[in-house]
Length: 168
Image (tube, rainbow, N blue to C red; front, top):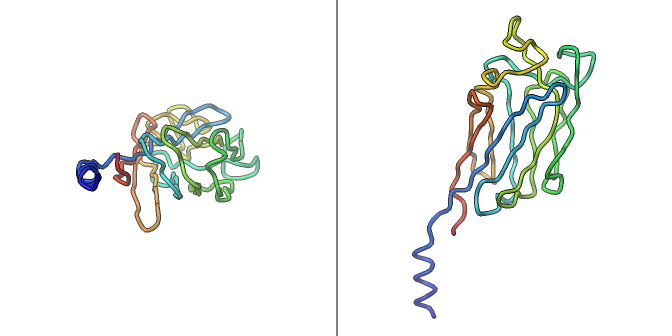
């Protein structure tokens, strides 16, 4: 039996754990979805979305009297609430939000809605709607313990983070 256990341990291959993110423009409520694309639980993790590097200088528009334009929407969890331990406060005009996860099972998602506006004087869809290319450059940081992995949104409003943290 010891030989079989040793053989299994030696043939186990690392499974790529990953997190895929998608931004969906949906004026007035825009949506961010984060999906664990791996075969293992991500475990306790913090996920930080930072819009500061986006091509259009994106901001969160959470109140009617701040930095955003016309329509506003505060943060609202719409999927995966059971995986959330904490969500950082998001004020009007902020560019960053951090989700603290207790874990995220394989193929499960956490999603939230909020209003996102651009800060360009002239933009493809106006400041209250975000074109796919305008979120390009926004970043994601996935941190588990001392290990950190990063991803960047592309011109299709998607970002991916790949890690190796489980065996299959």
